[in-house]
Image (cartoon, rainbow, N blue to C red):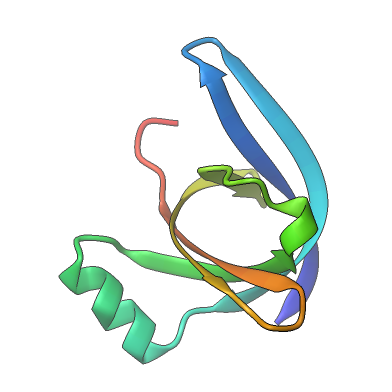
Length: 91
């Protein structure tokens, strides 16, 4: 588990992206999440926890020079939201 600067990316149109750099806590996904994602057709890569106020439904997360798609979110009671990431093909 580590705190990283991540970039939330919203695709405005085919040529325009809106980017927001924030801090997030990056963790590996657990075995249960990994298999549940696989059953839904995703390869679970990471779970990133961020403040709800920082997240506005962005579908792409970038960190360590790689892009990931958000396939699921989970709202926590402490003002945070968990973003579950999968490899983003074609970006």
